[in-house]
Image (cartoon, rainbow, N blue to C red; front, top):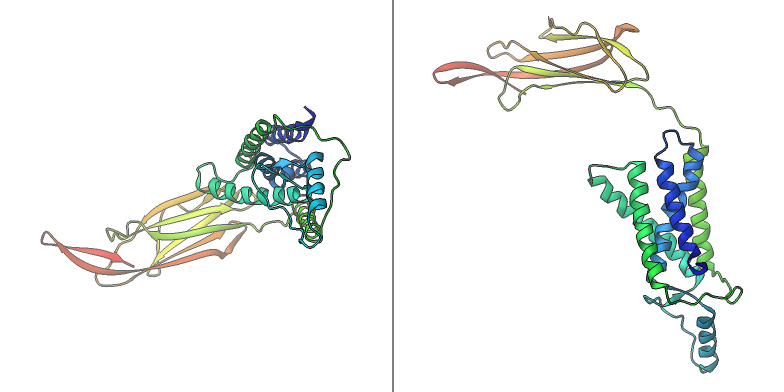
Length: 301
């Protein structure tokens, strides 16, 4: 049990994240504390444990014996990383951080093309599943390893290791600051207004009007539509929308032979009725087409 304590802790953190993400109201600071290890450390750590072995006292003794037997004229060459062989703690830390970031990027690409999308619960379940899977594989590969005695190996950091460690700490501190400490910037509220040909393929003389509210509260609007400066009447004198609500209306226009149609829509807010809040313009070019011996007017952009 002792030699697998690190993997048990990794699985426990995954379980805590899975349970935490399903709570309705989650404090941001606690969420950041729980999710940072899952994103930056645990997937790469578990994968590294599955691919490489922990360094043991016997490994250090063997390397020391090898160096003592080597000729003084032979330059010392660092052992390359090989699957299934032990690695040092510094290499293990750097591999854990790099692989975790790579896994997070790949998981983000996959979730982005799936219907579930990039959501908190999809992130936690995806990274948690990969972490647990690699941890179980590491548990299987460790079944014959001998527990290392405390103090048998020393943790050494080279200058590149220190630079990478400093960069990792800088990224973590900035992530916590942006997610939990920095006050959120209020997003400006707005409303969208659009006008498109109702059926451009068949060149019908009609437009599709749409309004969608991204305001912070319920808002009442007034909409006017004119065709060649002649107002068109419709059932859009008062439109009330709650945030995120959308309103779409089909507006037919009457074409005049061989004359262009200039369609203008203007949106007014009830709190500013004298100033147009949004306006859109569209121009139809009217042409005459003969079908089955009958002349028909068509509208093209």
